[in-house]
Length: 133
Ligand code: 9YT
Image (cartoon, rainbow, N blue to C red; front, side):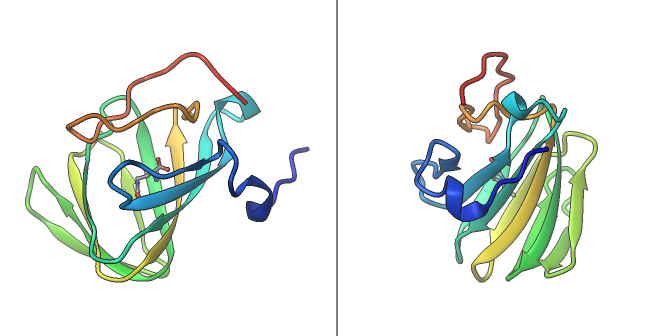
């Protein structure tokens, strides 16, 4: 059994902030944990606009605090996101998450992230095979 607390992974390699500073993600479960998915708590900072396209991954995002909106960039549909809202990118949807306040979201990725992925210019994470702890 794996038991892990957020405060144990703060300031470790499992805490990731991109160069933009738009968000910080705490990777509670990664590929190396061999669960078949990764699970993250992500703080998305107020006022940020985050265009993402997970070409290689499915992602589910469950908001537990804050307010924002997610736009499906294919259809133009905009959905409010707040405590209790889930969105699932079941079609590798190109999307944009706008945070109106600081938001805490719980994210699940399949296949799991290794923890070393960095968004490219299109907001895509590459598919990485190697792991690190
Ligand atoms: C929903 C969101 O903020 N995605 C960007 C970061 C992602 N949650 C991650 O890499 O953990």
